Length: 570
Picture 1 (cartoon, rainbow, N blue to C red):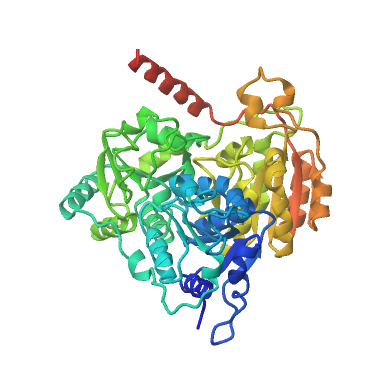
Picture 2: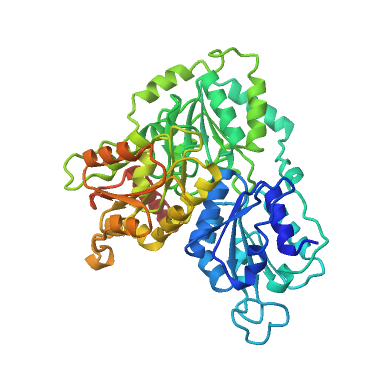
């Protein structure tokens, strides 16, 4: 008879989860002693990845969830292990990533005895701590029906929008035999937010009668079937497509109809299209109304004749572009109906103004110009060099100035080719997230991070080495906390500057191969050398600290928004 831990592991395997990420601990021994079991055909089951710390393991689960489009699982000893996970779990919650945090805690009978690492209500009530950042926060201290708690947790993962979940079992309950069965979420996840037919028909009639139409795709629509349909529609009907910051890469940016990113560090072409040279109809598809996505709530987003917002999230409906026409609908279902409604229109017949709109858009440069007079290498030149040689790799960008340059200057050439933390921006997240992405995709990858981020979570490079990942870690070293340095020039230097570190020696100390580069030519030579190599490589890239980020329109809109708020409160 399987125990509770075995039932949960089998359930995860049946849900399509191939790996979980963890730091070992006594209270989760039941999970660790069960994972080696194989299925009837002798195939290995869900396998563990041992991280350097629980925060890194949680970032790996987050990256895995985003890339695999299914839950990412982190296991941790409750108490200190779960506490180490909280920062990254908050990050996942802000970005609505389906992360499962599983843990084990003190056995039954130890509560109310000042037990070591008591996380029950008689100690540090961890379920209460995590309740604000999860959709389900449960502790199980009974073996009467332990799998019911697991089933309740699984059901939360098919709610929309998705958020992380936390489930902790007493250690002896995890090891107890169970006759219960886990549910399958396949039937639950097949359900979609259905549209009101009359409203849907009205929206499609407005769109299809338009002279020209463009689409801005957001994170709710960043799903494989949606990406495929939108690419097909764009190609057939010459529809220009941009993405919000948190959905960069949802429409492959090397596609001739891509206008890049709108929002923070936006591409110039996307800003021009959605705020100045607007088509007759703008369709916002699955967009979240965050500050970064809206370029600090740019009021010009509502300037087209027809502004239509379609989203599956009732929380976000009507908030992305104030005054827009809104439709609550599953994004894939909407595109299916839209494509069907255009079936009688030959290519080029619908939206006759799209070709001219595209010609106008192409007159606007994609990128801000790069200054030539920087003392050290400009970060934008480093991004462009990496993009030249590593364009067929997926890319994960960390939080900091380098993230702004990556958002603006990196062009995705593959499906879902870019991942970043958007709404909380935990520094160092990308080291773990990149490893998680690599387990979900098993393709070569690139992680762009900074020296400040590397000081926080760069140790996870050794995890990548241990598990033979094919990842290049590019550490942009400006010898400082770049965003802090740029945002407050009056700071005392020691508040934002960092000492010089040798990231090549660090890489070598954990088994990776490292290269130090100080110019675009050197970076080109190294990137060309290692682009087809397997294994873990670290690029220590010396960049200019004082290069301004390509986010001027965002900064201007943020000031404008602040002034409008001040005036309204006067």
